[in-house]
Image (cartoon, rainbow, N blue to C red; front, top):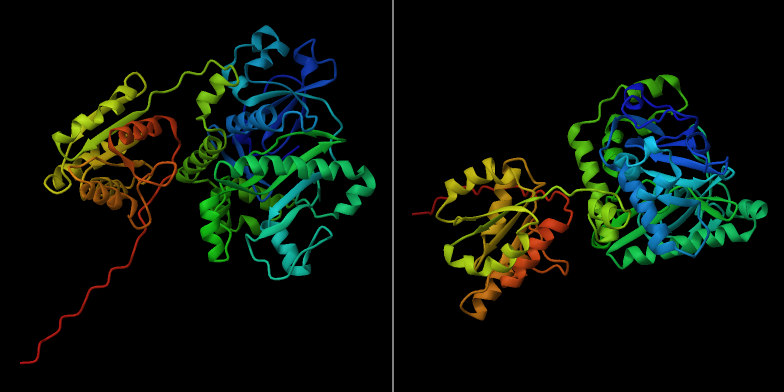
Length: 492
């Protein structure tokens, strides 16, 4: 059993019944205790919101983390892996009710975070596939030029693309850190099929992710025999990065921030948690005493929701409702639409029609030049409460950036601002408006999926759709040091 802070256990979804296992995140039960369907052959797995870093379970819960893990695990099995290999999954979402007694049926929280799986022999190794060099693989490479028996080319750096996917298994430690073992040792014990299946499944996930602008750096599986068990392709078991961020980071020779709990790891590194021993009771007690800041927890939830949306194309609640059969009711988002002039309003109608019935919204007319004080007050008191702002402007189109600046100064970079260039009287006006939004340094304003400014009345429609259907990560303004010039005297 994992070492979990008592305060976290008291807040985790633990059912009354025989607990077969309690991992860092998941609780596993004998389904036979709850239902005649179990018969010693099925287990009931509940994914909590617990969060672990460096093999320590932290004294916090990350809201909806267990829901994302469960939904994404189901997504890969049902939509992508499909018949590629046999898995342990029996039921997920509303389908779990078939295997539960009446008093547990219809429990939305259980439906969102639980899976019925086959009871299989516990795996003795973890099957890791690497497509990019980073993490513990980079450390091994720097020391020996090899990872788990694989000899790699010289000159690779953090984030380098490997010449081909490699199988790098580890031990499966009950406590403490997993240790690298050679791929050959696993082949000797289990045969070649395990390695082949791991690489095939990882490649399928990687190819799918790549089509959605996401690069899979590495991923961990657990095969029981030749059956793929446990979680598949989640942010807890895989390292996903935005493709554009990876391309940019490679020019600097550094791996970019991954879309998972890396944000929490960075916080933990600052405290030195990565230097502590998870098998030392004093270190465990010290880590459990640390309070994770609320902003770190909130950002982690945003990241988990964001990678889920990037990979599936759906917000979590929509996927739960439409694909998992769960009776989830979406909260209507609040959307502020801001234009610089009342003459711009006719270009809004397509977007407003879309928002009707889907969101709470309002339209405000405010010039970034002539209403500076009102715009500052509006951002500080009203826009900070919005789920998204659709800022529309023509010609110079400074309004989107101006609103974003004021939101950041108000301490709310998490509010997305979608920039729409409105159609002007001439082609030159249109080009100026589009360029003013697309050319912003550091690009703090949200663009369309092609990386272009939304444009015209159809652009307003697309921006309104994105405001209600997309997930966004905070975009703080990039700071730049000011250089105040010296006064010079002109010689007389």
